[in-house]
Length: 255
Image 1 (tube, rainbow, N blue to C red):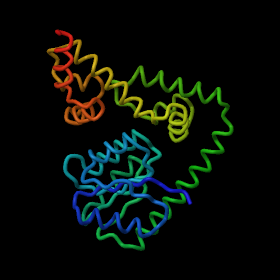
Image 2: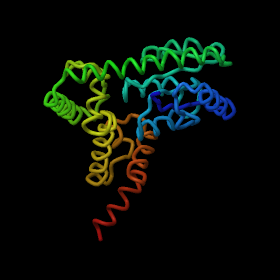
Image 3: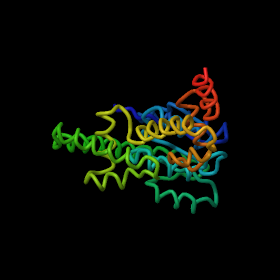
Image 4: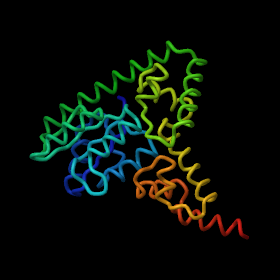
């Protein structure tokens, strides 16, 4: 049996723990590797490890389910997302369809419906794995490396803009799914994880070269419109906030 890393996002603790338990009891091969209370915390996990499935509530603090679905769509279009909606929230679930979300669950969650949806997703994941394997066989190793290098070049030239895996894949004449797969196979990280490294390195340079620059402006220059997300991600990657990073390195330079 194949196993798929699963992330559950729900701000109500009891509902979240209950859903974790029910997914595990179904024993369909979905391994719950994390459960968090908002979309921002979910993104932090997605940026660190491979996730196959995300089950997320819509209304949550910090970052809601729609914004999370949008971010996941650009980070890795292969991630399966299930939106959990309460009464009167179906219109929000419909909006999520624009970001590749194909399934949704209504609260209270019915066991049969949960089983049906997870079974369908499992079949999709297994089919994708088989199709990807066949597609990879038809591409030579040299061609794969050329595609990855072309993707890297595109990302280096455009990391400060709103990167879209879809648009990059169209430029390279390859599906987004296959692009993500071959990139991760060759570079041990997803295209968006590569972009994150580029952005953080650029931010480090800007912080040191422009001591008076506003932290928010630095984030915007390297591609992060949300200053809180930029600061949080920067600290996650460097171990310190942007202001701390600048202060410490300025002291080192000054001796």
